[in-house]
Length: 102
Image 1 (cartoon, one colour):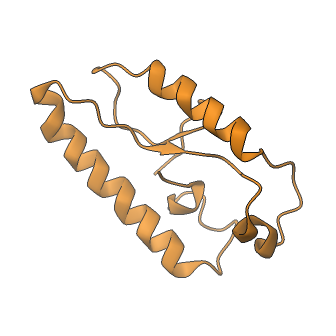
Image 2 (cartoon, helix red, strand yellow):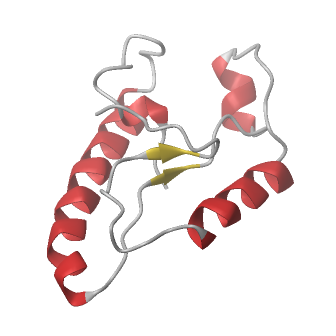
């Protein structure tokens, strides 16, 4: 599970979650490298983000936009997982199917 907060391109949006952002950026890099190795063995590795989900962390962040319920996020993630193929590029993808830039 990743997050848009792990994107170096998008990092200016929220800057007070330093350790969370660093861990997600490292996760993105690690899973991309893992995908490159495991794809040769027919193993699919996906880097998926659940979107903005109604959680305590989101509430504490001050986010004022529309958030997904946990059930909506899970359903969206399930759809993404169902559609995965071995040809997927290992690019982080948000629950809405949009790529998250590195």
